[in-house]
Length: 160
Image 1 (cartoon, one colour):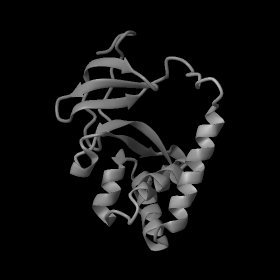
Image 2 (cartoon, one colour):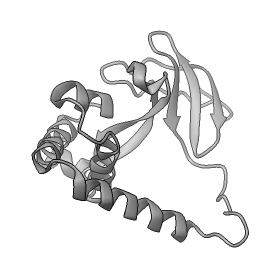
Image 3 (cartoon, rainbow, N blue to C red):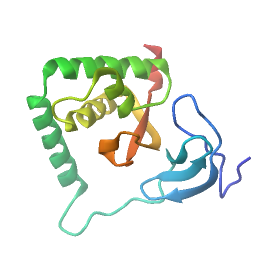
Image 4 (cartoon, rainbow, N blue to C red):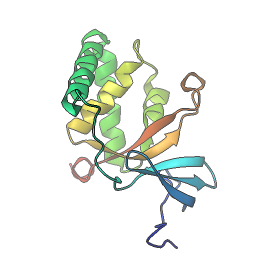
């Protein structure tokens, strides 16, 4: 059972849902805890506070550069791969089960440009199809055990 300082937080990994041990808040509006099956996992929680960008920079600058980069990747990636990725993301969103980019690439393979994976997930999130619900550790060797977002279909995506 949780308390106000350490509320009960569950593992966001698909088909897990175990209560995390030793929950603690970390940066960026996420909490970290230990899942008996998945080791350290990160779950989205309310943020501490708004983070102010360095002087002379704005969040708009970062968003603009992000959007330009994703547009460039989308422009040069195989349209057939992008269509298939969008179809699978919608299918996963509709299922109501939490999933990761690794679930997508396990099903349809990696694109020519690996950044295209993130671009498709970002597009689906901006369209309101999916929302991030936490972090998990990647098991793909090329990712060097880095953190990756865990996604779930929005209520709208699951009901349409």
